[in-house]
Image 1 (cartoon, rainbow, N blue to C red):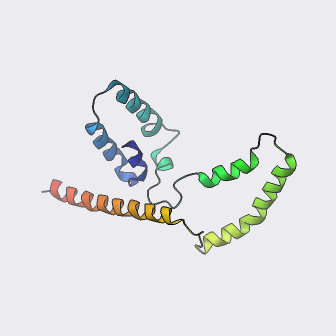
Image 2 (cartoon, rainbow, N blue to C red; image 1 turned 180 degrees about the vertical axis):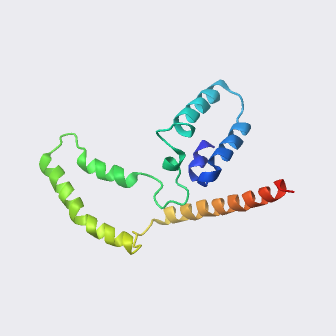
Image 3 (cartoon, rainbow, N blue to C red; image 1 turned 90 degrees about the vertical axis):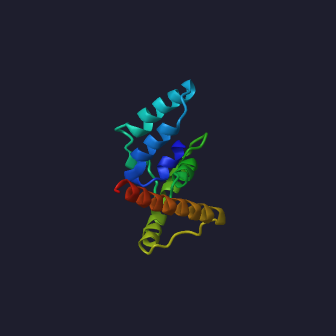
Length: 139
């Protein structure tokens, strides 16, 4: 249930965390995890919520960065390969910037499109629920 916090609108993360805590059963291992989670993710000044929250972001993982790093990190690093990789990246960056300015993004896999649609529907349902619950509370 904690993973859902990354997808929640930023202004609802704390309230959602409180809801998760209220539903959590009292178990020693769970308590240890909750302590860790609060310390690492909820109240860590080095990792503010806005940094790990991916609500409505196109890229929700760091796969692109990991892929680039794997090109540079080899068991037997070769300066020639690293320099070539950096040159290729430098030559490609103007194309990438132009594509982003024109909002041209690569084609997404069908599975990713479906996942994005599911997340979007869930978030819309959540927003409707939030509006309804605020309306009920204000009565």
